[in-house]
Amino acid sequence: MGSAEIRVSARGLTKRFGTQTVLSGVDIDVAAGETLVVMGGSGCGKTTLLRLLIGSHRPTSGTISLLGQEVGSLTADQFDEIRKQFGILFQSAALLQSLTVGENVALPLKEHTDLAPEVIEMIVKMKLELVGLREHSNKLPSQISGGMMKRAGLARAMAMDPKILFYDEPSAGLDPVTSADIDQLILELTRSFGVTSVVVTHEMDSAFTIADRMVMLDGGRVLKNDTRAEFERIRSLSPEQAAALPEDEQIVNQFLRGAAQGPITRRRSADDYREDLLGLDAGERGFLPSGTARPG
Image (cartoon, rainbow, N blue to C red):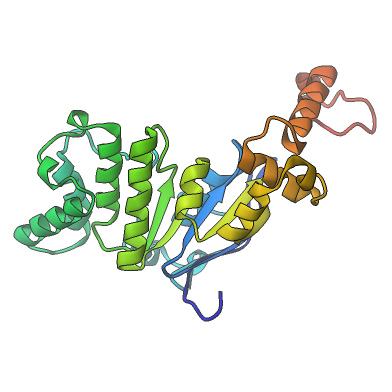
């Protein structure tokens, strides 16, 4: 990435819940003004990675740095100051249902600044104008569509002029036109304000529209971390061409193409058969035959 300012960084990031390892040795860097898309199948660890980056979870091992500061070395008050410099668009938008759209956007400004009410009102109008919702400021979340709620959530995430934006499945549950609208908003925010974005998504059309770089996770590890152009090259390969790739890139190819046949489905079928044959409950009690690996 050359001399670009690195705003989000993780090194050797590992997260375990009990005996289950959800993330294993993840390394990422995201530069100023860059959009990194994190993708992978269900249960691959992408949501856990996002939660670690925003401080909802603590890593079992490894380090996270935001805006040049290692999070693990900060006090709670110091991390709160970092939090003021990033925004989050949740999958469900997470608007407070008892507040109007405008009041939702104003909330972080009221909580974290000493701005006068008239200044906050002006900022709210500006943020809602950015997402095309200024005329809906006085409506409750129940009175607007799902796509409008996502845009309102994005306006709230932008309220404090953050340097970093985290997105959790921004296109989830939206029709294709509304999804494309959200993609364009993400692009415009990046171009206009130089915001660094980390986007967790499984929507391939969206991913290839907004990404500068992409990371694919599988079983908690990074399969590939590269430019959008390199992912596009792998996606464009035919099944015959993909068969000559290393196994990790074969997995990437199958996932990007949404193909029914490939290493992902072969592995899944083998795992399901093994669990059915050996009996998951028996394995958990330690009754597997000697020398047999435990399921999962």
